[in-house]
Length: 227
Ligand SMILES: Nc1ncnc2c1ncn2[C@@H]1O[C@H](COP(=O)(O)OP(=O)(O)OP(=O)(O)O)[C@@H](O)[C@H]1O
Image (cartoon, rainbow, N blue to C red; front, side, top):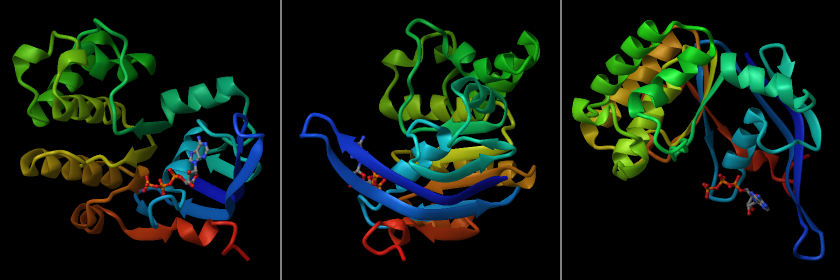
């Protein structure tokens, strides 16, 4: 479902004499439906960079990044947007929302975007918000004033609302209490059971061991060490 092959990435620092910093070379990764693969490696090894390339936020200088039948490395922006709407979900560490939109709509929005009717989308949003212990009195308010942990849980509810065939998870259990952490691990397990291909970054080693089937060490792709 997700297949990265021969991917290379350099950053050009335009404000520092256009210095070119190669950070990745020969990156390969394959994730099958129903599988969860953890990206590991020391800080700065390139875990976030690889994840952002799969989502199409960073461009790759070489290689292919297939998600389903779309090559994110070469697809036009409109195809990447369609892929994100229908196929590829991303739970980032921080919630970014339009101000004043109620939480329930923030969570239901990915379902509305794929054509689910308002009632059904709202019911699913309520189910997820309740599972993630967001008090009902907050559902009609914008999450912009919520606590960090509440915002993260709204973000997770939103990320799991639509059954994306592929999911990217960036530290989904960071800063959650034990109860909510186990809800998130349960959501990940359910996504795997319905056949989602998942790539995750988990500094929480116990969480990683519980839900991930394999680890890929991205430091193998740093240019100094790549073959
Ligand atoms: N936008 C950017 N511009 C320039 N360099 C960048 C940029 N993003 C990442 N890098 C560099 O790429 C390398 C990999 O960074 P990345 O954030 O992917 O590492 P990581 O493995 O996710 O680290 P951590 O575990 O600390 O989050 C680092 O050397 C970083 O400085």
